[in-house]
Image (cartoon, rainbow, N blue to C red; front, side, top):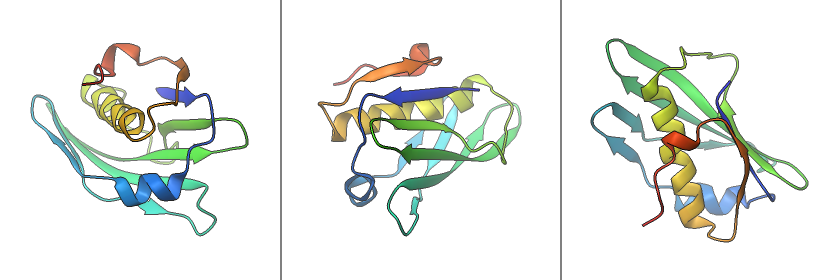
Length: 117
């Protein structure tokens, strides 16, 4: 399962308030909405990837004591295509830009995370 683990708990309310939609072509990726739970410990981002077929799924960001995890919500379980991993990589870059002191401590999608600008 594609995932990214960050070295600290990030402020999900700050991320929620700072989030700007992600739209990319080749492959087509659209992440336009974000939902936060009432405890501000979990975010869900509905995602659309268009490749040879359309993939609709949710990306989850879960903040715990000493780490934050970005992963596919298991209940939506899309095929792990290049586009799906690209969407996760773009969202990872978004987190790294909003929280520059955060480091990735574990991932299996490093080839899909763009370099910071």
